[in-house]
Length: 68
Image 1 (cartoon, rainbow, N blue to C red):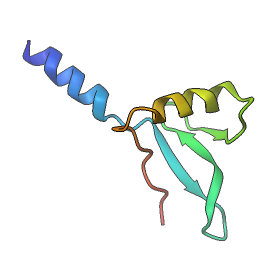
Image 2 (image 1 turned 60 degrees about the horizontal axis):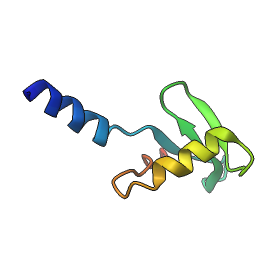
Image 3 (image 1 turned 90 degrees about the vertical axis):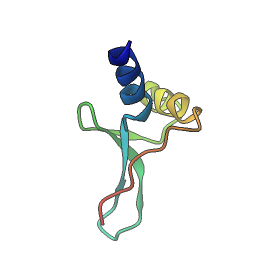
C-alpha cells in the first residue's frame, strides 16, 4: 500500500516538460519533453503538442521554468 501511494505521488508530481528560452532570453515557442529531450513546437497540428496541452489540463501540472 505504501509503495502504491509513493508511486501515485511521484507520478502526480513528476514534471514531464520544461520551458526553454531563445538566445535573447525570451520564452521560446516550444517546450522540452524531459523523457527524451524532444523540443515540441507550439503547433496545434503536432500530436506531441496536443499531448502537452492535455497534460496541462490537470491544474497540478506545470512545466518546469526555463533555465536563466
